[in-house]
Each structure stands twice: as structure tokens, then as C-alpha cells.
Image (cartoon, rainbow, N blue to C red; front, side):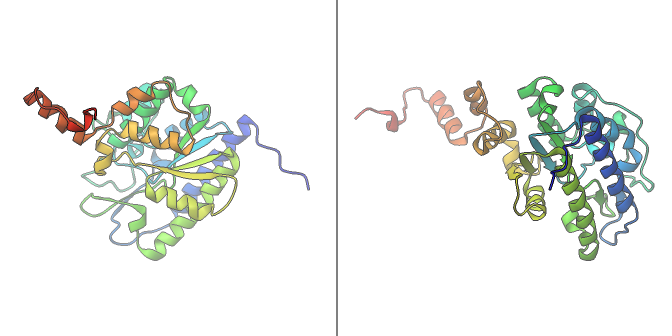
Length: 287
């Protein structure tokens, strides 16, 4: 039996746009109960910018797809781009466009689009790493793409963020079925060698959808500042993780990058030596 032909550049982007529209349509019909109070769907009110992101950067094939969980309040919620911290989207990805408003907006979580003055730390760290390593976005997107598993942002009545795994059980099942199917379509179009979960949730969903196959699955540390590890040289740690997996080759400036990783024990020793220059570490003595 003849194998299906890989999609052409234009066809791959068209298929991804159609897949995103289907996901948007399915989730637009779904209703969620308490503790979900507000739902933001950037595929609706920020579609123009999301579509521009796909058209500009989602040409197949991709060797690596980075998979996030769902939109953050100051990232994709504002710009329609995964991990879309405003400055990164505007200044590095060089994307902009009209951003509408959710149907029902929480007063503590306004959507102001590219006028948003709050920075999405996770997005700033993620795109900052890629900008540092690849310099120009075209070099990064030649083999990589960043997407989210779920396009919806959920909030409690207080405005507190609610992650997809905290959605009530029956509704979560329907939500995950739609997102799983979208992920299958994405992988079918992009044909990645690697699917890298940004955090534990995304990696687990990828493993559920692809328990066995040609796509290898890995995980990197999530850049959220809520994760204490991420606040201690996140970029260097993730670079090492990707190099260890074999996703990225060891960079020429590996030593400099790794030196950026904090070593509290070494820092304490250095401070002690400054306070007492005559002291020394006996482990460095020759026998």
C-alpha cells in the first residue's frame, strides 16, 4: 500500500490552521462547572495573531516540537502565541495584530493585548533561551516549534489560575479527548523526531497520546517562577537537559552556559574565602 505523501510547505500550514480551528470549534461548545469561573480562549479573540504565528513559523517538517500546558495570563492570553510574552512576540518573533476580548472577562485578569505591561516570566525565559542560542527566530523555527496542549485558560472566581488537570472529571475527559486529537493531527503534519514536554503535565499527555511510535518524548523543566528550581539558572539547566537527551548538540559555549548554574555550596565557600583569605579547602591539598 502506498504511503501518504508528506504535505508541502503551504499544505502543512493550512492543515495546522484547520486543525486549530476544529479544536476551537469543539471547545467553544463545551461548558465547565465549579471551580471553573472564567474561561479565556485565545483561539477566538486572538485568532489573527495565532494564525500569523502558524503561517510564519509552522512550516513542516519540524525536528522538535516543544509542548506547553495551556495559556498563561500574561502570555498567550494576551497575544495568542504559545508562551507569548509581549516583548518576545513583538520584538523577537516580530508578530503583532489585533487582540479582542474574552466574552466574559474577569476584572482581575483583563486582556489588553500588546498593551499589557505585565511580563509572562515563563515566556520571557523560554523565548529568551531560544533567542540566546539561535539569535534569529528563523534559525530556531527551521527545526523547532512551540505549541500548547490546551488552548484554554481557566480561572477560579478569585481570578486564580486553574490548570487543565484541575477541571472537574467528566469535563476534563471531554477536554483531553479534543486536545489529544489535535495533538495527533499536529504530529501527523509536522512529523517531529522529538516531542518535548515543557513540564511534567505536557510530557505525561504526550506519553498518553503516543505510548509507542516514531516520535521520541522527553521533558524539560518548566520555566514558571512558581517552580523553585526554575529560579536558579533555568536556561542553563534546560540546555543541559536537552543536550543530555540528544535533542541539541553540546554548544561551543557549554562551559560558559554551565557556569551560569548556581552552586550554593561553591558560592558559600567562595564567600568564606573572601572573609578569611588564609582559609582553604583541605580537599584541594595534595597528599
